[in-house]
Image (cartoon, rainbow, N blue to C red):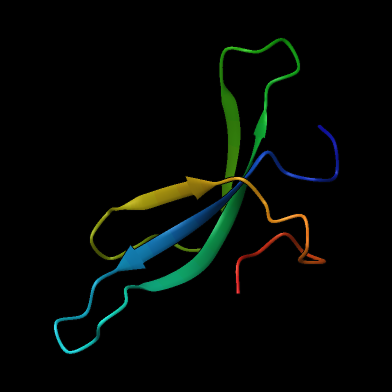
Amino acid sequence: MSNKPSFIAYAVRQRPDAEKANWTAIGVAWAHKKGGGFNIELEATPLDGRIVLMPPKDDEPDGVRG
């Protein structure tokens, strides 16, 4: 695995009183060397079970979306 993950894992929750959803980085995912899958490391589990994988942002030092 390379140091830079293929994807950042986010828990995304839409709050009824907020206009925008709350995105919280909860882990990372790396593509398998031979393809066909991903290794995922989570630091937390979302309450509603919804995880969104997004590619890291190039303009952020840790790749996490602000």
